[in-house]
Image (cartoon, rainbow, N blue to C red; front, top):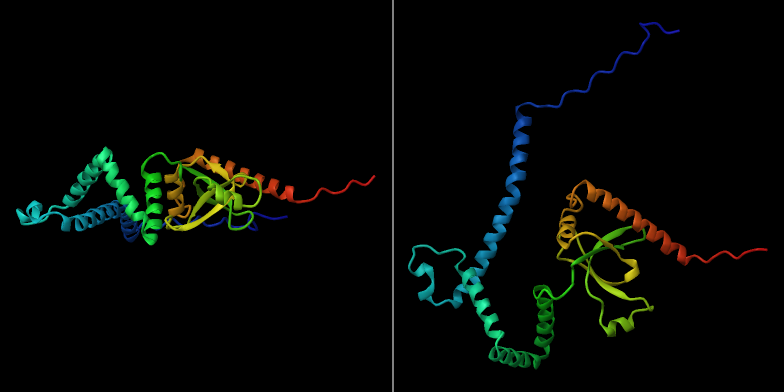
Length: 256
């Protein structure tokens, strides 16, 4: 029988977090870094782009039309404005009959050069797909089982392969071309063809997928409802893996 003196001593309460002067300075510094960091990087990238366009356009503008000729300093963004109106004018001229004729003649001349022909045609198709608004590439996000079974990666779904590639792929199932971005740089990655049944489409935009990849999963798109949606998608992926594995195993023979 234990007495009051034999009872274990109560545990010491947890120490209070350090909230001294240095701790407050550290919190203030991190808060300022979080607030100003994205703004500073965004402004730096915008300034770099404007400066780069100005440097490219400036040699093509006559000296008499440059602002620094009449001002003691240069005007940032002047080259960007000139480039905008120049591209708009080129688009207006190319939409006319004479402009289309000149474009066709230029494409014919470029088509006669073997090395330039492949580069030009590839870049033209990429620009038409990205900026014309008619293509459907990279507007859908999906999950594929990569790099090993049980591990799922986010991919951007592109278009179906052409007839030549489709005939060379094994099996009768339809394949889809996908791009798997790498983290934290989504501009690099892997491109491959996947059967359509092996892709699980995710209700995410390409921007949300890029944010998720660049942050390596630290920044999750959406709030709490999206977390439930991600859990449901993980369950679907696991169910699909189990279903795919079961189809590969032979059925046991029945013994009477």
